[in-house]
Image (cartoon, rainbow, N blue to C red; front, side):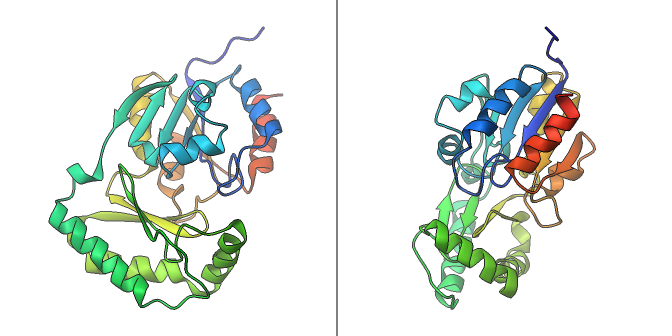
Length: 249
């Protein structure tokens, strides 16, 4: 039996790469990942919080099925099921500044007219804020509808441009990802943050697979980092197809 490469890892975005947005991984994709793990290390890095990522990857057993699981861009991380890092945006931005920022967002959204709005416009995570102008409490159909509306009207892009100008002194990064929201975090806390832990473990060949690799997308920085070999995918099926041709021949 061929031995697994000790210095190679395939690192995956979640939404749009291993799963459809906010959906559970398909059994056939999960089975393929188990086969891939026999050849290389595998890991995931997503912008969502840990509970959401684990929900999409089949529950807490995912911490054992992947060598590395990074949520919130790597601000919360696990290696072989054991926590290795946890950082909080509260330790980086003073409470007074955070409240000014949050209040501004809520005022902005209150004056925004959309085809519909639901609840949970701001989600406070460990390493970031997630802002959803339409509200995170959407059905799948409403998510799809807002995504199409946003592509036409640029709701998220316009909001990000306003926030970037208004709060330039906070040195924040704004990253549009998924269908309905964007993430806000301190500069340098994008998905590249997780790479330091892979390097520490001697992983020199880091293949990153993601769908939002365009400028402004939440895979852009890690995709273009000199430490990674970036691969753009269009769906979970495309991810498997690319992996099959690169690693399973």
